Image 1: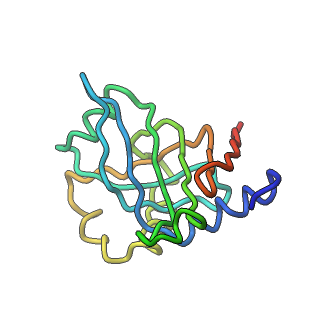
Image 2 (image 1 turned 90 degrees about the vertical axis):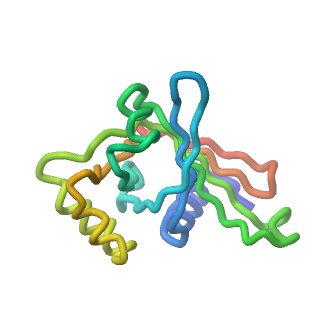
Length: 150
């Protein structure tokens, strides 16, 4: 059980470290759109990174509406998940990663996902950053803590 912000931040850090995939939600012209992405998180928890091809619906949606959410969870599809699973919603804005931090952050991403090296080399691949505005962590489907980042 999480009781305070410090414990919540530790749980968030562990979940981001242990999980490799998240469900990214973007806003399309008519409907929200969800897709699975591999992600990595900065040590300060302020930024998440993912890669996508520019010719995808998710990329086009982000170009229209930069506000996104990502769901990362610890479920194992077992009954025990109703008691033990954690779900983390990340709210923020996404954009192409550019400039001097690109190589550093790509290295962080590839440390977690070395099998995606060739994918990142594709000229049509966009390396994206998600600037986190808020984390919402839920335990046992009812214990909710929200943490806003400045």
